Image (cartoon, rainbow, N blue to C red; front, side, top):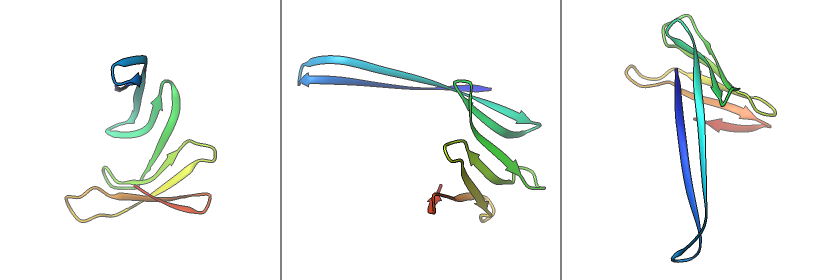
Length: 96
């Protein structure tokens, strides 16, 4: 499964003089193991990996491929709510 994200930005010199248009399209492809997304690729490059616990739809860790990689650890949520992720990169706490 894949989805496209498109962004378009116009630059203006004055109120009525457009000087350029920048358009970016990113294609995200999802890799599944059964019903669970285990990886996301953007334009063919691995961007995120997911590790699941024993339950259905129970992500435990999301690894964001970066330099260095970022690790998000999912915490349980109340029934009916999505779990939230917290992680760390270079000693900085990240929340999602």
